[in-house]
Each structure stands twice: as structure tokens, then as C-alpha cells.
Length: 176
Image (cartoon, rainbow, N blue to C red; front, side, top):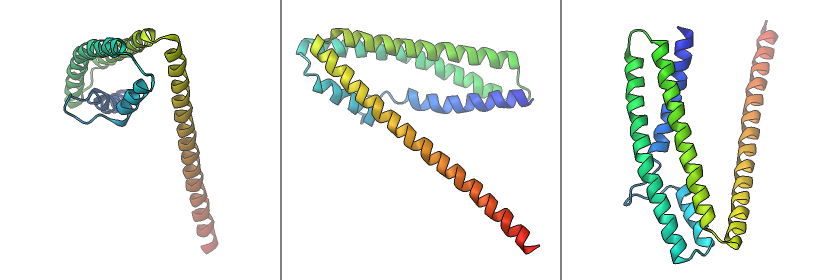
């Protein structure tokens, strides 16, 4: 039972994360998220030719069409997982099967995304490729700094929690 609950918690968490991912693809009339705006600004900085812009637009369109099918599969899996949650007893074989299906779909999505980025990269000329790599490196460095800040913040908060516990223990022994 505990194993099933752990799996169930993991699935529920991954569903919430993937729901955000699914809805991250904006409709044409919706405002785009900052990540999408950043990528578009990055492409603008590369001074693409009209032909390159058209090729990239076609690649992105093809990618989005493929993703719609994958997101439909994820939606179907999510429905099956919810049915499993609502059941009186969890069938671990079915749970494992759903988890494996989800891993396969997510792997396929990641593979498609990497392939799309490679197609776009290969459209660029040598100068644009160098500029693209430099921009990506700066972006990755910025993300790493942000993650390090968050780690330090988490460690500080954890240490403060330990210190508060120590102080409470000390106060309890003083009053005895």
C-alpha cells in the first residue's frame, strides 16, 4: 500500500508539472510566456533572412502539430491515472504500465524538441551559429546562477529551521 501511495504521489506531481507544460504552447491570440518571448528575441538578434524566418516558421509549425497528438495522448493517460486514483485498490501492474507509457511519451516529446532545435540550428550560417551558441551559453550561465541562488536560499532556510529547533529545546530545558 505504501509503495502504491508513493507512486500515486509521484504521478500526481508529474501530472501537475505536465499540465503546465501542455498549456505552455500559446494559441495565436494568447500572450506568450516570457520564455517564448526570450527565444523570439534571441532569433531576432541573429538577423535572420526572410528565407530563414520562413524555414524556422515551417519547422515550428510542424513541431506544434506533432505535439498536439502527444498532448492528446498525455491527456488520455491523465484520465486513466485519475480513474486509478479513484479506485478502491490500486492495480500496481496497471500503474506501472501507465507510468511507462508516460515516460515513453515524454521521451518522445523531448526527442522531437531536440530535433527541432537541431533543424533550426542547421539553417543558420556560421556567424549566426557562433552568435547562437554564445547566447545559449549566457542563458545557461544565468540559469545556473539562479539555481545556485535558490540552493543557497534553501540551505539558509533549512539552517534557520534547525536553529529555531535548537533554541526551542534550550528554552524547554531552562524552564525545568
